[in-house]
Image (cartoon, rainbow, N blue to C red; front, side, top):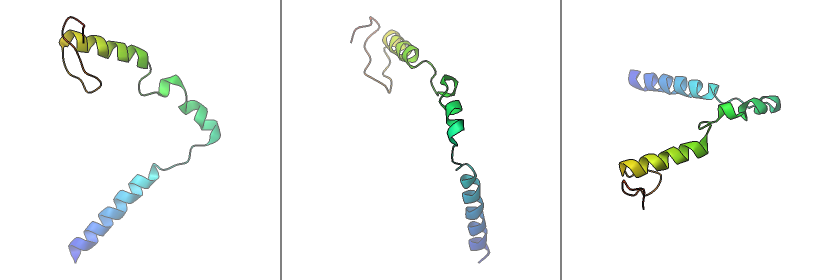
Length: 74
C-alpha cells in the first residue's frame, strides 16, 4: 500500500516537472529562436567537409556514410 502511494507521488512529480517545459512560443519570440546562433550546428557545410576529411584520413567507418581508405578514394 505504501509503495503504490510512493510510486503515484513520484509519477505525479515527474509529470509535473516534464509539463513545465511545455510552453507555447509567442510569435515575437520565434525570431530569436531562428537566429543562426541557436542552431545545433552553426556551420553544417564546414562540419560535413571536416567529417569527410577525417573519415578519409583515418579510414574509419562513421555513422554518416561509407568511408574509404587513407588515400581519399572510395
